[in-house]
Image 1 (cartoon, one colour):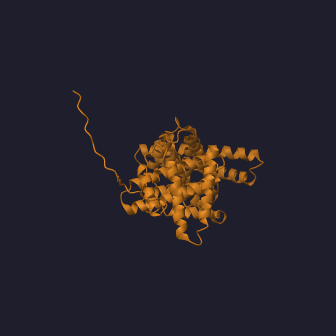
Image 2 (spheres, one colour):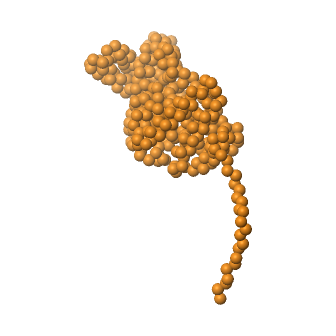
Image 3 (cartoon, one colour):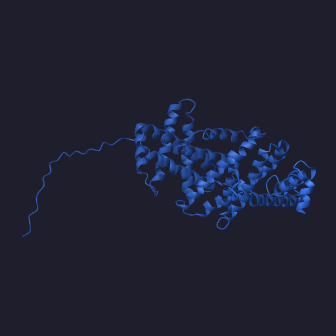
Length: 401
């Protein structure tokens, strides 16, 4: 057969040779070959099922079932592409840098399967969708991209909410808020929020999202200032504060108030330590200014929405604080400088109360707070001196024989 084939095809320009080359390309498991064709078929079926489901997703179980089935088949095709095509390219050292990174990320997510199955389940879906989305953008398929965007944003919203909900459960399950294992969960929460804003919220803003969600867009514009240049510790704390503010508008159920409160407390702790550990005066003042903003956001924006308190006394104490804050806020229009001064004094005194019974050593920042209160005339400075009016003489004890 080989001899006959060679005699028939002759040169590379013959009809039969062109067919042979085409079939060879199709049978090679690359994205432009068999796997690519399969992904394209499954993707089109999914988009059609999604569009039908979106028309009437409240009362039609049959459409929902078809959509879920199409989605599973589509994910399987993408997973097969990674294992058949990307893996073989990396193994044969013919993979691009993008494909090498894609496989490395795939194995990183797969490593979660045994110990963190829920996170693995959601992150793997997210990864596969991102991989195909990048391919569609790279091929400049305009009409397909418009159709895919609607499904992509909807599904990614759901996946990000599931990931954050999973983290929220972990935070809530850990009773001791000073548990070191929580530090890593907080890091994951902030990373996931930033990832969502960069990858999904930007897509929404490109559409008609801005008109309907002006508050979120305003917070996003604050976040944009942290996307340029190298960030220091203060910048990162401030960026995470903005991320939490956005989360209160986008993920109120996936990241409930009790978890957001603990995330704020984590940022407050980091900010206080930064202020007391910073040696350069100008940098310390900048860190302090950020801390005051953080205290205000936590106490006024977050705690004001809190319904359930640990004790009635804590709730009453907060009510008194909020009443004072509202009274001071009346000065804002008439005497802004006095308003800023009194507000700072209120925040400092309130924060100092919380620092006495903590495991963290806050002695340096308490000293710094007291210095601020003295400067504002809210605390008297006692000089470290002593004077007596009587004369005292010391008498040696007699030695015992």
